Amino acid sequence: MKLEDMLSAVEPADAASFDKCTELFDNIAKPIGSLGKLETLYAKCAGASFVPVPDISKRCVLVFCADNGVLAQGVAQSTHEVTTAIARSMVRRTTSVCVMAESCGAEVFPIDIGMIDKVEGMTDRSVGRGTGDMSRGPAMTRQQALDAVSAGFELVHEKKREGYGLIAVGEAGIGNTTTSAAVAAVLLGLRAEDAAGRGSGLSDEGLRRKIKAINTAIEVNRPDKNDILDVLSKIGGFDIAGMCGAFLGGAACRMPVIMDGLISSVAALCAVRLCPAVKGYIIPSHVTAEPAGVKILAELDFDPMLHGDMRLGEGTGAVALMPLLDMAGAVLKNAATFGKIEVEKYRKWN
Image (cartoon, rainbow, N blue to C red; front, side, top):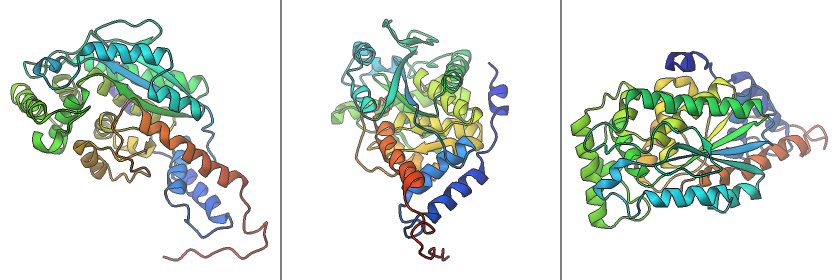
């Protein structure tokens, strides 16, 4: 699918639905705006869905799984076999995100977007058997980057046709905090030292190797920050590109998409740089413990509800937001209004 076709399918989220949802909250018998971000994030779901009271009861998590060639530079404690093990556990519904999702009525779909090993039971959208080592050359071809974006875009449309009203995106892939920090460094103009975190628990020496790999990759590839596909293809990952496409797809088919932590926030930033209107469809979930993720939240002017120092990935932070959105919807639909209790409505003061 052509990138231009994906972008042209996006229109701004519906401000009228957002405003009407907010008005309905204001009519509930409580101080105006007193549920804070519960109200604003639910209203954002309304704007993204183009209805004042969105139906987000059928929801799922798309987990994009991929391997990264930069592992050869010693940037993680684990090898690609751990990606495989996580994927197998996800198929068995025993990973953290699967257990959390089951508790709030969400389905998990593990997607092979570019793993080295094949795992039976996954949704196969693979565009390559792991990326190249970005410190030695491009991580992937430009066509592979586009194919991964297209895969994410089309997957969201499939879920929309199947009746889902809310999607969260997550990922699994050893080494993807390195690729994500590299992309963030280029797009935000950061030093590698300020973008790279310890990921799944790097030592000081491991962190130094990670920073060196990022600096080398940027120097070798010279990605153009004004060309998102160039950045993704040279220093990104298949998972980042797939999630970027998922954010674009959500906007194109009028569905809110919950952003998770560092890796999905990098993908969200890529999507917004490609098409600013996508921002109206992205629901931030939590403040990641990774430094680049915090900087991306500031860049996108997102103020998530959850501050839990989470850094697991898989979409766990995104899923953690779902019960809170349900509570907001329950208040909107079931709580007494000022008219019902025959009390004068509170005034909204500037």
